[in-house]
Image (cartoon, rainbow, N blue to C red; front, side):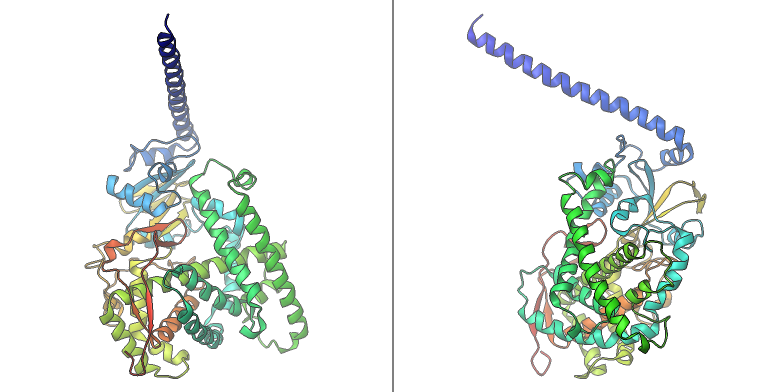
Length: 517
C-alpha cells in the first residue's frame, strides 16, 4: 500500500470516528430527551398535557434546559425578549416556553393580564425569577405571599405621598446638578449608564435620608457601579437553567458575579454603620416613626427579619437595582423620543415654561405638568422598561376558554400588550394625546402595565414618575434635544430583566438660548 493510500485510510478512519461520536451524541440526546419528556409527564402530567395543547409544541425540550437553548442557538444570548419575539413570529401567541423543568405560558392579552395580576392564587413570582434569589434572596420581590404582605404593608410608608413630597427638593437639586453633567457629557457616552447614575443618586439620598453634601461621591458611585456590573453579569444565568447557582458562582463563568456581590455587601455595610451612628446622634428629632426613609424602616424593629443585616442588604439592593434601571432607562427613552419628534418636544417645552418659568420646581408645579406626564406614559407604553412579568399558579386559573393548571407559570408580555393593535390605534405611533385626561377613559383596563397592577404592583411607582417628571422639566427648559433616529420600528431591543436597545442611541443636548431656541 502506497503512502497516499495509507494517508487516505487514516483520514477516512478519523472521519468515521468523528461521525460515530456525533451519532452517539445525537442518539444519547434523543434518548435522554424521550426520558425527560416521560419524566415531565409522570411528575406533572396536567401541566405537561396543557403544554401539548398549546402553540410551540414543535420546539424540542432538552434535558434540564427545556427551550432555554433557544437564546443561545438563535444568537440571542441573554435576550429573552428577542427570543419571545422570534417565537411569536414563528408560532404566534400564546406561546409555550419551558425554562428547565418549569413550564411558562406566555400571553399578550390585557383581559387575561388583569385576571392573573389580581388573582389571589397567582401572587407568587414565576420560576423564571428563581435565579434572582442569589442577589435578592427573600426580599419583597421574591418572598412568598404570606410573608410579602406584611413586609409590603410596612415598607410602603417609605413611598407614601407625604414621604415623596419630602423627596422633591432633593429631586430638584439633583436635576439641576444633572444640567452641569449634561454639558460635560460626550455624545459617545453610554446614555443608559449616564441616566442610571442620576437615578441611583436620587434613590440613594432619599432612601438613606442624607443630603447631597453629607455623601461622599466615591461611596455612592462605587455602590451604583457595582449594582450596574452585577446586573450585567447576572443576566447570563438566565440561559443556563441546568447549572445551579451554587455551582455557577464557583466556576469561571460566575467569578465576577460572586466578587461584585461581595463588594456590594462590604460597601453597603459601611454605609449602614454610618447611618446607625447618625441615627444614634439624632434619635430625638423623629416625630413619626411610620414615615421614615427606607433604610431607617429596615433598621427599625417593625421590619420582621431573623437576619436583619443580611436582609437589609437584599432589600436595599433590590430597591436600588429596580429604581436605577427602570428610571434611568425610562429617561433615556423619553429624551430619545423627544429628540425624534420636535413638535411634541416643543409642546412639552411650552407647557413647562408656562407652569414653571425659571422658578424652582415644586410639587404643585409638577401636578400641573399634564402633557409632560402624557409624554412619559406614552414613552412607557412604547418602551416598557420591564417588558415581561411572571406569576406562579398555586391553583387552576381560568383564562377565558382555557384553564391553566396549578403548577404552571404564566408570563405576561407587557411589550406585546402595549403594542397590541386591539387596544391601541397605530401602536407604533408616538402619540402622547392618548394619555391626556379627556382620552384616559378610552384606555382598556389591563392594556397599560408599565408598573404592573394588582396587590403586587411596583411599590415605588409614584416616586419614579415624580423623579422622571422633575428631570424632564428641568432638562427640557435648559436644552433642546435632537436625535437622528426616525422611526420606532428601527429600534432593536434587548431584555433579560430590564429593556434597552442593542446599540448606542443617537441623542444630543444643545443648550437653549435665552429665548428658548
